[in-house]
Length: 263
Image: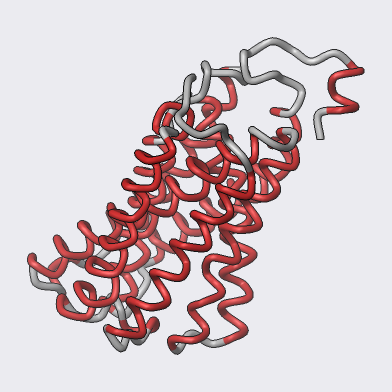
């Protein structure tokens, strides 16, 4: 896929850090309390929709200037065995269970819809910057194993700034680990479906159910089951992701020699 600027990991990291800086500045300006962003319609608007919306505009402009829309949004082809589609299916099922179990009657409809708009922006932005722009840049410089690791690592570290806005250090540490693991789930989902829009929607659905239950103040048993299923898929993904490295991006299986140098 032709690009205006040759993909490079340093460019990808620059855009990623730019997005993090925008989120930090916007949350500072909006005086965001991370632990309360889902509590009311206004806090969701101020803490999610507006800041992430500004970040999304930055990413759209950056991707357009670089000319990376093609490789950022699509794989060259579905390049891993089709049975691995079980990963996005099971993770989505976990998200559906969390979302479906939420007590929406406890919230105003406008609040629920604002949360929906917010998580769609989060899914779009965080996946575009991580498994879109950064992955494209990394693939232009390093091997696929290193590209996977860098994107998962930075996706985890993206959540580190939450500490500066009221999130406890202990829970943030767990969130960083969970995001790293989820990175493998979203990476596999991109490769098995061939489209970044799939992990974008998976990400948004998971956050919508999670934040809605948090806003209500309770987690029904079915929602807890969905969360456990999602977590199990994350750990399974960390194992299965190494299977994907046996395949080239064009779908052909690597030789032993190719596998030895792919990192």
